[in-house]
View 1 (tube, helix red, strand yellow):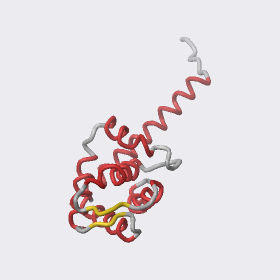
View 2 (spheres, rainbow, N blue to C red):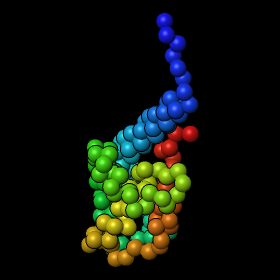
View 3 (cartoon, rainbow, N blue to C red):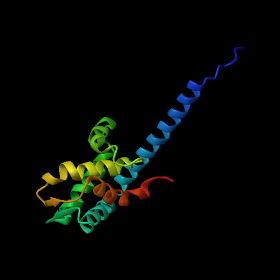
View 4 (tube, one colour):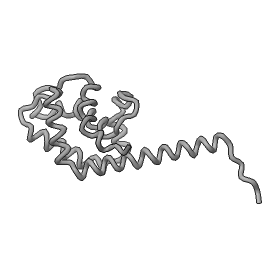
Amino acid sequence: MAKAHISATNTTDKTIRAIDRKRERERRFILNKAKENAVEFSSRLTQRLIDREIIETNSANEMREVFTKQLQSIATMEDFDIQMKVAPVRTLVQDPNILSLYLTQYVIEDLINNPAIEDIFGEDIDVYRAVDSIFKVLRPQ
């Protein structure tokens, strides 16, 4: 029976694959929990963005509906579409929450076109921190 040759490269590849599997499980867990609790999270997110004066809106209810729709649809989106959406803000923080990145980019890029939005204030990192303050509870420790 031949002896298995274990090289540094093989060990490195196994480690990288293990990290990738862990991140993928975390991503699926976060997106599914957000979908299951979309109404609650959208209410909290809308209130947080208004309280921190990130968004100025004339209809908080419409903002809740918009965020609920986003949270329910993101769990079924293709990974490529999510990655394309978060690409501009991917380097914003060192260990980002994928859902927080996605919603940050959504607020910055798409929400401004909503008729209920009067204005959006703050830098990208301010928006991310406000969004992540709601969704950090979903990250497994």
